Length: 352
Length: 265
Image 1 (spheres, rainbow over the protein chains, first blue to last red):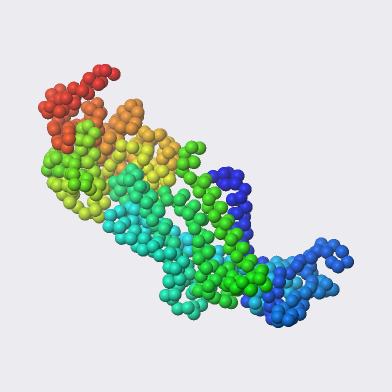
Image 2: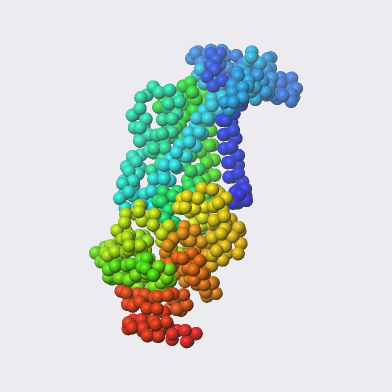
């Protein structure tokens, strides 16, 4: 199986991209030059920094540098940033900056890169408050990417168990559970999400919202999983080994957990991977329209909320970059899921 | 010897829409302690239904009447929770298809361990291991250590059937129900398994109900034989008497066709 996976270059690439995204998120403190809520009035809407290796006199440097920039205000009161070609600011690596706890354990103030205090570097530009977009994308990744994982695990837990129970017992239990599932699936996901969110107070703290988002997304997500697992359980319970387990007097829950659910795992792994983008997009959608993660905390969704107006996109196109991260992460999960499905597909296995 | 199981006026119907299919019709007989009791009949004669009724594992569309006494208690009307305690611990069962009676994703040892933990409350790992190995040896498996680590698909049908018997015996049941345990095995393995059953009866003092459509096996193995036909009990005899002087017209016909069949071979 590993061999087959490694043969698929695209899937390997996607796995690497995802791993690096999660790595960036996990070590966001280290990779980001500034704190996620560090504002700077001197750099409102500062465009992405141009990183140079060659200076005015055509000298080639081995170390990249940027030019210190300053702005003038034009007739529309817009800031026009200009590089000052006389003042090169070298980019330094492993510099000391704000202090943080790596993984919440080790105290440190080392950052991957940075510039001297007299200037600032925004490799992906800055937002309306002069906060570094790159930094905020990394911190946002923590929320956006972890919501996907946690949400999907919770819905799978619920979906597997309830689907397994419905399929195994059949009859009235099945009937009640499946009607419940249909009630949830009946309402279009996005509106259900909005309705659920609106049933809670709007002014929650970011942690509360984070938990709430996971609860909402899992509440919507478990239904479709339960339905498929129920179908699989219905056919699995007719297997003789289930009869054998019964005839040995094992309890129903033991049979469901040991003898039914494990057989759905190959399906589950594929669908878990394929459904993670749904959670990421769900969080992004809610946060973008202001119902999810609140400022100053960042998530990929609420970073995009400033990109809702066409004027902003026209003037400051770099604020769309969080969207690129969302697209990249979602696509990688899809490709990964599709590849896993092809590999695990039992029909292919038999023909081997 | 006293009776351990008594079927009394047992009738089972399968509902199918508005129709009802009669599977067992007013069957009454007793199985004595420590005997090997054969039940023969053709496909659809109700012999498997009898086993499922005894175990309380009838499908949902089955309707039953009558009583099944196990050690003088009527177990046919027991609720599922009580029946679960009897199943396995009192009444063991071995199915026809050894290959499909095991969970293919769990190793033999893993499934055995679960059984001992949940049904026998053996919590000590070393003790569990000893029990597993001793039962696997008892059913004639040569390399029990390897068997424990194997997955079902790595073993042959005969080996799996032996493992199934070891599982069932490890719960120390009083009665072992074997539902066509050798039908899917080849003839050499079949005779080994048959010998194993006689050996185990003496060793573990267990009553064996042996369900089969093969008259040959009944003759070799069983103390008494019941003949089922279309859900009715036709006669109960010792095998020798059954072959020499069948009373019932159906049994006569059955033995006749069977002897013709063996002669042709």
